[in-house]
Image 1 (cartoon, rainbow, N blue to C red):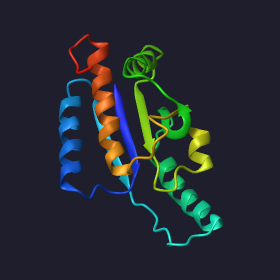
Image 2 (image 1 turned 45 degrees about the horizontal axis):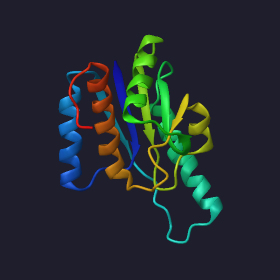
Image 3 (image 1 turned 60 degrees about the vertical axis):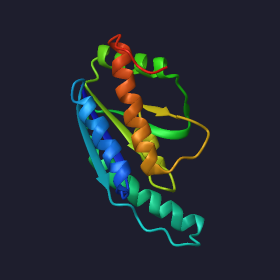
Image 4 (image 1 turned 90 degrees about the vertical axis):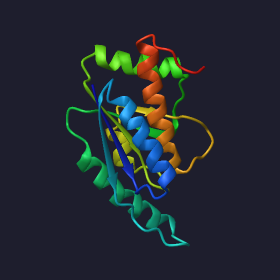
Length: 159
């Protein structure tokens, strides 16, 4: 299975880069992982709603150009469905059974995802109603993908 993580913004802190690299290494056993980091648009401190919408649209264009036509797209969205780790594992397994060999997980910028990206998404996923730093969320998502593969193979994982 091919897993692509499409994110807006670059990782800055070494400890987060180390964590992403660790999960990327662990995931090699289960899938081919590709991480695409897109340049975020600078948001003025007191941006108007119109400016924010334009920024999301620009970032959205970059995201959409990174998605392959045959990819199953899962967007991270506060309005999406929440899963337990076991349900998330079953979700990924089911996608594979249905012939989806490429899954793109999309994490937007600080303003969220554009309407066009949300429209392209095959599924909207929410981890929590809480807000997390986008850089930290990458680690959380990769950890859950790793956990999902371990669960589906009946391998031990921390409950």
